[in-house]
Length: 363
Image 1 (cartoon, rainbow, N blue to C red):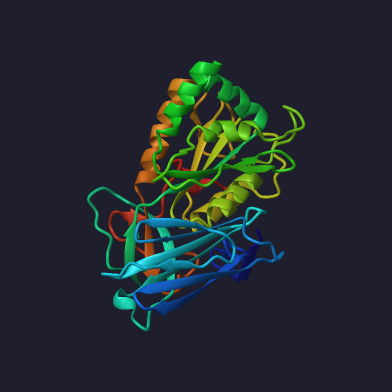
Image 2: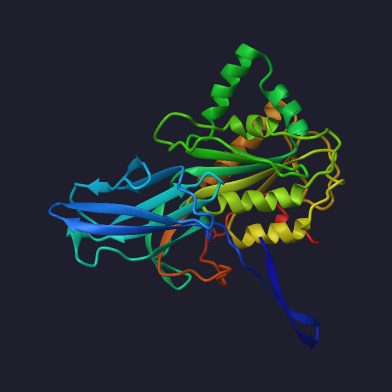
Protein backbone atom coordinates (compact mmCIF):
# COMPACT_ATOMS: atom_id res chain seq x y z
CA UNK A 1 0.00 0.00 0.00
CA UNK A 2 1.42 3.39 -0.99
CA UNK A 3 0.13 6.92 -0.73
CA UNK A 4 0.80 9.50 -3.43
CA UNK A 5 0.52 13.07 -2.17
CA UNK A 6 0.78 16.11 -4.44
CA UNK A 7 1.47 19.46 -2.80
CA UNK A 8 0.77 22.65 -4.74
CA UNK A 9 2.17 26.18 -4.28
CA UNK A 10 1.60 27.98 -1.01
CA UNK A 11 -1.68 29.89 -1.01
CA UNK A 12 -3.89 31.59 1.49
CA UNK A 13 -4.80 28.96 4.06
CA UNK A 14 -1.75 26.81 3.31
CA UNK A 15 -0.54 24.68 0.41
CA UNK A 16 -3.01 22.77 -1.75
CA UNK A 17 -2.80 19.02 -1.24
CA UNK A 18 -4.22 16.10 -3.20
CA UNK A 19 -3.88 12.57 -1.81
CA UNK A 20 -4.37 9.28 -3.67
CA UNK A 21 -3.76 5.65 -2.78
CA UNK A 22 -2.07 4.04 -5.77
CA UNK A 23 -2.58 0.36 -5.02
CA UNK A 24 -6.18 -0.17 -4.06
CA UNK A 25 -7.46 -3.62 -2.97
CA UNK A 26 -8.20 -6.17 -5.61
CA UNK A 27 -5.90 -4.76 -8.31
CA UNK A 28 -3.00 -7.20 -8.00
CA UNK A 29 -4.77 -10.23 -9.48
CA UNK A 30 -7.28 -10.27 -12.31
CA UNK A 31 -9.96 -12.52 -13.74
CA UNK A 32 -11.00 -12.81 -17.37
CA UNK A 33 -14.27 -14.30 -18.57
CA UNK A 34 -14.95 -15.81 -21.96
CA UNK A 35 -18.68 -16.22 -22.50
CA UNK A 36 -19.75 -18.37 -25.45
CA UNK A 37 -23.35 -18.57 -26.59
CA UNK A 38 -24.65 -22.08 -27.22
CA UNK A 39 -28.17 -23.27 -28.06
CA UNK A 40 -30.19 -22.54 -24.90
CA UNK A 41 -27.04 -22.23 -22.80
CA UNK A 42 -24.05 -20.09 -21.93
CA UNK A 43 -20.57 -21.53 -21.48
CA UNK A 44 -18.25 -19.52 -19.25
CA UNK A 45 -14.49 -20.07 -19.14
CA UNK A 46 -12.51 -18.32 -16.41
CA UNK A 47 -8.93 -17.15 -16.87
CA UNK A 48 -6.71 -15.29 -14.44
CA UNK A 49 -3.52 -13.30 -14.05
CA UNK A 50 -1.48 -13.26 -10.84
CA UNK A 51 1.71 -11.23 -10.24
CA UNK A 52 3.50 -14.39 -9.04
CA UNK A 53 1.75 -16.68 -11.54
CA UNK A 54 -0.04 -18.64 -8.82
CA UNK A 55 -3.01 -20.85 -9.56
CA UNK A 56 -6.23 -19.96 -7.73
CA UNK A 57 -7.00 -22.01 -4.66
CA UNK A 58 -10.71 -21.54 -5.22
CA UNK A 59 -12.91 -20.26 -8.05
CA UNK A 60 -16.60 -19.48 -7.56
CA UNK A 61 -19.28 -18.26 -9.94
CA UNK A 62 -22.63 -16.80 -8.95
CA UNK A 63 -25.63 -16.19 -11.18
CA UNK A 64 -29.37 -16.11 -10.57
CA UNK A 65 -29.01 -16.95 -6.88
CA UNK A 66 -26.90 -20.03 -7.67
CA UNK A 67 -23.28 -20.39 -6.57
CA UNK A 68 -20.92 -22.97 -8.05
CA UNK A 69 -17.37 -23.88 -7.01
CA UNK A 70 -15.06 -24.68 -9.92
CA UNK A 71 -11.66 -26.26 -10.27
CA UNK A 72 -9.07 -24.09 -12.06
CA UNK A 73 -9.72 -24.42 -15.78
CA UNK A 74 -13.15 -26.04 -15.35
CA UNK A 75 -15.86 -24.38 -17.49
CA UNK A 76 -19.24 -23.32 -16.18
CA UNK A 77 -22.35 -24.04 -18.25
CA UNK A 78 -25.59 -22.18 -17.53
CA UNK A 79 -28.51 -24.00 -19.16
CA UNK A 80 -31.45 -22.01 -17.84
CA UNK A 81 -32.94 -19.29 -20.04
CA UNK A 82 -32.46 -15.73 -18.85
CA UNK A 83 -35.89 -14.14 -18.45
CA UNK A 84 -34.32 -10.81 -17.46
CA UNK A 85 -30.83 -9.31 -17.23
CA UNK A 86 -28.72 -11.23 -14.71
CA UNK A 87 -25.41 -10.50 -13.04
CA UNK A 88 -22.64 -13.07 -13.32
CA UNK A 89 -19.97 -12.74 -10.63
CA UNK A 90 -16.71 -14.70 -10.72
CA UNK A 91 -14.33 -14.72 -7.76
CA UNK A 92 -10.95 -16.39 -7.29
CA UNK A 93 -8.98 -16.77 -4.07
CA UNK A 94 -5.23 -17.37 -4.37
CA UNK A 95 -2.92 -19.16 -1.90
CA UNK A 96 -1.24 -15.89 -0.86
CA UNK A 97 -4.58 -14.36 0.16
CA UNK A 98 -5.09 -12.21 -2.93
CA UNK A 99 -8.56 -12.09 -4.44
CA UNK A 100 -9.69 -11.36 -7.96
CA UNK A 101 -13.23 -10.61 -8.99
CA UNK A 102 -15.02 -9.97 -12.25
CA UNK A 103 -18.67 -9.18 -12.86
CA UNK A 104 -20.74 -8.84 -16.01
CA UNK A 105 -24.40 -8.29 -16.78
CA UNK A 106 -25.95 -10.89 -19.08
CA UNK A 107 -28.85 -9.73 -21.20
CA UNK A 108 -32.01 -11.76 -21.61
CA UNK A 109 -32.40 -14.23 -24.48
CA UNK A 110 -28.62 -14.58 -24.83
CA UNK A 111 -28.32 -11.49 -26.98
CA UNK A 112 -25.18 -11.04 -29.03
CA UNK A 113 -24.19 -8.11 -26.82
CA UNK A 114 -24.28 -10.35 -23.77
CA UNK A 115 -21.57 -8.75 -21.68
CA UNK A 116 -20.99 -5.30 -20.28
CA UNK A 117 -18.63 -4.18 -17.53
CA UNK A 118 -19.94 -3.43 -14.05
CA UNK A 119 -18.34 -1.77 -11.05
CA UNK A 120 -19.35 -2.62 -7.46
CA UNK A 121 -19.72 -0.01 -4.73
CA UNK A 122 -20.80 -0.58 -1.13
CA UNK A 123 -22.97 2.09 0.48
CA UNK A 124 -25.08 2.43 3.60
CA UNK A 125 -28.80 2.84 2.99
CA UNK A 126 -31.11 4.04 5.74
CA UNK A 127 -34.38 2.13 6.26
CA UNK A 128 -37.17 3.22 3.93
CA UNK A 129 -34.82 4.88 1.42
CA UNK A 130 -34.87 3.79 -2.22
CA UNK A 131 -31.63 3.66 -4.17
CA UNK A 132 -31.67 6.09 -7.14
CA UNK A 133 -31.31 4.87 -10.70
CA UNK A 134 -28.05 6.81 -11.11
CA UNK A 135 -25.12 7.40 -8.77
CA UNK A 136 -21.63 8.82 -9.32
CA UNK A 137 -22.59 9.52 -12.91
CA UNK A 138 -23.26 5.82 -13.58
CA UNK A 139 -26.48 3.89 -14.06
CA UNK A 140 -27.40 1.61 -11.14
CA UNK A 141 -27.93 -1.82 -12.69
CA UNK A 142 -28.70 -3.82 -9.55
CA UNK A 143 -28.91 -3.52 -5.77
CA UNK A 144 -27.95 -6.49 -3.59
CA UNK A 145 -27.76 -7.25 0.11
CA UNK A 146 -25.40 -10.22 -0.09
CA UNK A 147 -22.91 -11.79 2.28
CA UNK A 148 -20.38 -10.08 4.54
CA UNK A 149 -16.63 -10.37 5.06
CA UNK A 150 -15.11 -9.04 8.29
CA UNK A 151 -11.47 -8.23 8.94
CA UNK A 152 -10.41 -8.44 12.60
CA UNK A 153 -7.28 -6.74 13.93
CA UNK A 154 -5.99 -7.58 17.41
CA UNK A 155 -2.95 -8.73 19.32
CA UNK A 156 -3.32 -12.49 19.90
CA UNK A 157 -2.40 -12.33 23.60
CA UNK A 158 -5.09 -9.78 24.43
CA UNK A 159 -7.83 -11.38 22.37
CA UNK A 160 -6.96 -14.84 23.71
CA UNK A 161 -7.97 -13.75 27.20
CA UNK A 162 -11.10 -12.20 25.70
CA UNK A 163 -11.99 -15.45 23.94
CA UNK A 164 -11.55 -17.37 27.20
CA UNK A 165 -13.97 -14.98 28.89
CA UNK A 166 -16.56 -15.16 26.12
CA UNK A 167 -16.30 -18.91 25.47
CA UNK A 168 -15.70 -20.12 29.04
CA UNK A 169 -15.77 -23.91 29.50
CA UNK A 170 -15.49 -26.64 26.86
CA UNK A 171 -19.14 -27.75 26.60
CA UNK A 172 -20.54 -24.32 27.37
CA UNK A 173 -17.99 -22.84 25.00
CA UNK A 174 -19.17 -25.08 22.17
CA UNK A 175 -22.79 -24.07 22.74
CA UNK A 176 -21.75 -20.44 23.07
CA UNK A 177 -19.78 -20.61 19.82
CA UNK A 178 -22.81 -21.99 18.00
CA UNK A 179 -24.91 -19.16 19.38
CA UNK A 180 -22.41 -16.53 18.25
CA UNK A 181 -22.16 -18.14 14.82
CA UNK A 182 -25.89 -17.49 14.32
CA UNK A 183 -25.70 -13.80 15.27
CA UNK A 184 -24.61 -12.61 11.81
CA UNK A 185 -26.38 -15.08 9.49
CA UNK A 186 -25.06 -13.47 6.31
CA UNK A 187 -21.40 -13.66 7.39
CA UNK A 188 -19.28 -15.33 4.70
CA UNK A 189 -15.74 -15.09 6.05
CA UNK A 190 -13.55 -13.69 8.82
CA UNK A 191 -9.99 -12.54 8.07
CA UNK A 192 -7.73 -12.03 11.10
CA UNK A 193 -4.57 -9.89 11.16
CA UNK A 194 -2.34 -9.89 14.21
CA UNK A 195 -1.14 -6.47 15.40
CA UNK A 196 2.34 -7.88 16.02
CA UNK A 197 5.61 -6.85 14.36
CA UNK A 198 5.18 -9.72 11.86
CA UNK A 199 1.50 -8.99 11.00
CA UNK A 200 0.42 -12.67 10.76
CA UNK A 201 -2.80 -13.48 8.92
CA UNK A 202 -5.38 -16.23 9.00
CA UNK A 203 -8.85 -16.63 7.56
CA UNK A 204 -11.85 -18.90 7.87
CA UNK A 205 -12.99 -20.91 4.87
CA UNK A 206 -15.32 -18.81 2.74
CA UNK A 207 -18.86 -20.09 3.20
CA UNK A 208 -21.87 -18.59 1.39
CA UNK A 209 -24.58 -17.65 3.87
CA UNK A 210 -27.00 -19.99 2.10
CA UNK A 211 -25.01 -22.94 3.48
CA UNK A 212 -23.63 -24.07 6.81
CA UNK A 213 -20.58 -22.63 8.51
CA UNK A 214 -21.32 -19.15 9.83
CA UNK A 215 -18.20 -17.77 11.43
CA UNK A 216 -19.13 -14.99 13.90
CA UNK A 217 -17.31 -16.78 16.74
CA UNK A 218 -14.18 -16.50 14.61
CA UNK A 219 -14.11 -12.78 15.36
CA UNK A 220 -12.40 -13.69 18.64
CA UNK A 221 -11.18 -17.27 18.14
CA UNK A 222 -9.34 -16.67 14.87
CA UNK A 223 -7.01 -13.83 16.01
CA UNK A 224 -6.52 -15.61 19.34
CA UNK A 225 -4.72 -18.43 17.51
CA UNK A 226 -2.30 -16.24 15.59
CA UNK A 227 1.42 -16.50 16.52
CA UNK A 228 3.16 -13.84 18.63
CA UNK A 229 6.44 -13.37 20.50
CA UNK A 230 5.30 -11.91 23.83
CA UNK A 231 2.42 -10.17 25.58
CA UNK A 232 4.29 -6.87 25.82
CA UNK A 233 5.87 -6.82 22.37
CA UNK A 234 5.38 -3.66 20.26
CA UNK A 235 2.03 -3.38 18.51
CA UNK A 236 1.31 -2.45 14.88
CA UNK A 237 -2.38 -1.65 15.10
CA UNK A 238 -2.47 0.99 12.36
CA UNK A 239 -0.51 -1.12 9.87
CA UNK A 240 -2.68 -4.15 10.63
CA UNK A 241 -5.86 -2.12 10.07
CA UNK A 242 -4.55 -1.01 6.68
CA UNK A 243 -3.75 -4.62 5.80
CA UNK A 244 -7.18 -5.73 6.97
CA UNK A 245 -8.83 -3.12 4.76
CA UNK A 246 -6.73 -4.26 1.84
CA UNK A 247 -7.83 -7.85 2.40
CA UNK A 248 -11.57 -7.23 2.74
CA UNK A 249 -11.66 -4.35 0.25
CA UNK A 250 -11.66 -6.67 -2.74
CA UNK A 251 -14.89 -8.34 -1.57
CA UNK A 252 -17.87 -6.93 -3.51
CA UNK A 253 -20.36 -6.91 -0.68
CA UNK A 254 -20.95 -6.07 2.95
CA UNK A 255 -17.70 -5.64 4.83
CA UNK A 256 -16.08 -4.05 7.87
CA UNK A 257 -12.80 -3.99 9.78
CA UNK A 258 -13.00 -4.57 13.54
CA UNK A 259 -10.07 -3.25 15.59
CA UNK A 260 -9.72 -4.68 19.11
CA UNK A 261 -7.38 -2.46 21.13
CA UNK A 262 -5.57 -3.43 24.33
CA UNK A 263 -3.56 -1.67 27.01
CA UNK A 264 -0.40 -1.72 24.88
CA UNK A 265 -1.95 0.46 22.16
CA UNK A 266 0.30 3.39 23.10
CA UNK A 267 3.28 1.20 22.21
CA UNK A 268 2.43 1.26 18.49
CA UNK A 269 5.38 0.96 16.10
CA UNK A 270 3.31 1.17 12.91
CA UNK A 271 4.65 2.78 9.77
CA UNK A 272 1.31 4.50 9.16
CA UNK A 273 -0.49 6.87 11.50
CA UNK A 274 -4.00 6.17 12.74
CA UNK A 275 -5.42 9.21 10.92
CA UNK A 276 -3.83 8.18 7.63
CA UNK A 277 -5.27 4.69 7.89
CA UNK A 278 -8.78 5.84 8.77
CA UNK A 279 -8.82 8.08 5.70
CA UNK A 280 -7.69 5.11 3.62
CA UNK A 281 -10.68 3.10 4.86
CA UNK A 282 -13.03 6.01 4.18
CA UNK A 283 -11.90 6.17 0.57
CA UNK A 284 -12.54 2.43 0.20
CA UNK A 285 -15.99 2.67 1.83
CA UNK A 286 -14.94 0.23 4.57
CA UNK A 287 -16.29 1.07 8.05
CA UNK A 288 -13.88 0.80 10.97
CA UNK A 289 -15.44 -0.56 14.17
CA UNK A 290 -13.28 -0.14 17.28
CA UNK A 291 -13.56 -2.35 20.36
CA UNK A 292 -11.31 -2.80 23.38
CA UNK A 293 -10.39 -5.80 25.50
CA UNK A 294 -10.84 -3.83 28.72
CA UNK A 295 -10.05 -0.28 29.81
CA UNK A 296 -7.55 1.39 27.47
CA UNK A 297 -6.14 4.84 26.82
CA UNK A 298 -5.53 5.18 23.08
CA UNK A 299 -5.77 8.87 22.15
CA UNK A 300 -4.78 8.23 18.54
CA UNK A 301 -8.03 6.27 17.97
CA UNK A 302 -11.69 7.14 18.60
CA UNK A 303 -13.09 5.96 21.92
CA UNK A 304 -13.54 2.17 21.62
CA UNK A 305 -16.43 0.06 22.82
CA UNK A 306 -15.50 -2.20 25.75
CA UNK A 307 -16.19 -5.86 24.89
CA UNK A 308 -14.37 -7.43 27.85
CA UNK A 309 -17.38 -9.43 29.09
CA UNK A 310 -19.85 -11.77 27.42
CA UNK A 311 -22.73 -9.33 27.74
CA UNK A 312 -20.69 -6.43 26.36
CA UNK A 313 -19.42 -8.54 23.49
CA UNK A 314 -22.98 -9.64 22.67
CA UNK A 315 -24.15 -6.03 22.55
CA UNK A 316 -21.22 -5.06 20.31
CA UNK A 317 -21.94 -8.00 18.00
CA UNK A 318 -25.57 -6.91 17.65
CA UNK A 319 -24.42 -3.40 16.75
CA UNK A 320 -21.98 -4.82 14.19
CA UNK A 321 -24.75 -6.92 12.65
CA UNK A 322 -26.98 -3.85 12.33
CA UNK A 323 -24.14 -1.88 10.72
CA UNK A 324 -23.57 -4.60 8.14
CA UNK A 325 -27.28 -5.13 7.52
CA UNK A 326 -27.67 -1.49 6.42
CA UNK A 327 -25.04 -1.91 3.72
CA UNK A 328 -25.98 -2.51 0.10
CA UNK A 329 -23.89 -3.56 -2.86
CA UNK A 330 -24.65 -1.45 -5.93
CA UNK A 331 -23.63 -2.61 -9.39
CA UNK A 332 -22.95 0.44 -11.54
CA UNK A 333 -22.56 0.52 -15.30
CA UNK A 334 -19.06 1.73 -16.19
CA UNK A 335 -15.89 2.67 -14.34
CA UNK A 336 -16.07 4.38 -10.96
CA UNK A 337 -14.05 7.47 -10.07
CA UNK A 338 -11.66 7.20 -7.14
CA UNK A 339 -12.01 8.40 -4.49
CA UNK A 340 -15.80 8.14 -4.62
CA UNK A 341 -16.92 11.47 -3.18
CA UNK A 342 -20.15 12.76 -4.72
CA UNK A 343 -21.28 16.04 -3.25
CA UNK A 344 -23.80 15.82 -1.84
CA UNK A 345 -24.80 12.19 -1.42
CA UNK A 346 -28.50 11.42 -2.00
CA UNK A 347 -30.61 11.62 1.14
CA UNK A 348 -30.29 8.49 3.27
CA UNK A 349 -27.41 7.05 1.22
CA UNK A 350 -23.69 7.39 1.81
CA UNK A 351 -20.45 5.66 2.72
CA UNK A 352 -20.77 2.98 5.43
CA UNK A 353 -20.13 4.43 8.89
CA UNK A 354 -18.14 2.75 11.64
CA UNK A 355 -17.12 3.94 15.11
CA UNK A 356 -18.14 7.55 15.70
CA UNK A 357 -15.46 10.19 15.22
CA UNK A 358 -13.23 7.84 13.20
CA UNK A 359 -13.27 10.37 10.38
CA UNK A 360 -11.92 13.07 12.69
CA UNK A 361 -8.79 11.22 13.79
CA UNK A 362 -5.68 13.24 13.04
CA UNK A 363 -2.09 12.24 12.40
